[in-house]
Length: 253
Image 1 (cartoon, helix red, strand yellow):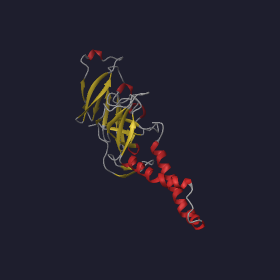
Image 2 (cartoon, one colour):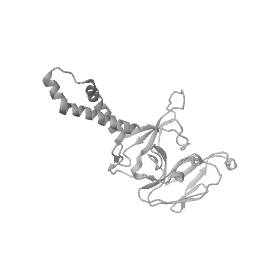
Image 3 (tube, one colour):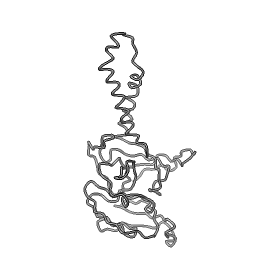
Image 4 (cartoon, one colour):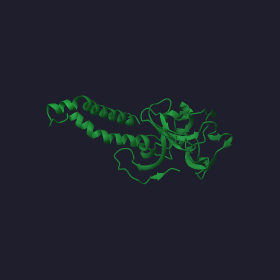
C-alpha cells in the first residue's frame, strides 16, 4: 500500500484534539464573555464533531482489526490480487499506532501464520507466510524447506509431475507444523540458502515461491515491525471496473 492510512488517521485525530483543546483553554471563555451566544468557529466545530468518530476508528484499526487489499501475486494461490483481508491487530500484542511500540504482550507469530508486517527495505506493508521463528535453523534447498533438520511434507496437486517444468508453475500442498497450505513452484533450480533465526526476527516467504520478493531477497522481518495476523478473506474485487463479490470469503486456519 502506498498510502499509510493509519499514519494519516493518527495525525488527523491529534490535530482535531489540539484544535479543540486550544480553543477550550485559551479562547472559548473569552468568546463567551464577550457574547454569550457566540458560535464556535467552523474549524472548532468540525474538530469537535470529527474527533470522537475518528478516535473510535483509530482505536478500532490500531488495536482490534484492520482491512487490507492484496496488491500482488506473491501469495497465490492462498491470496489473489483483489482479495480484501481482515488483519487481527491484537494476536501478537497491542501496539501504539504509528510508533509500533508493543504495550501489551499477548502472543507471538507461529510457523504457518499469514502475517502483515513492514519489511526492512520498504515502508509499505507486506504480507507473507511465517516460515522461520526465533531459534530456528532453516535450509531452503532445491525449493524444499528443512526446519531444524526436518524436511517439510509436500504433496503435488498436479496429476502429471512432468508438467512442472521451469516454464510452468505447479501447485503443492506444504505442511508446516501440522498446518497445510497450498504453494506454487516449478522444478527449476535455485541456490541453497541457510538461515539461523535470531531473537526478534522472522523468516517470511510468499506462497508463490518463484514469484515472490521475500526474505530470500531482503532478509528477515523484525518483531518491532509486525502489523498483525491475517485471519480471513472478507471480500474480493477483480482489478478494473468490476463489482466486488464474496465467493472467496473464508477464515484462515
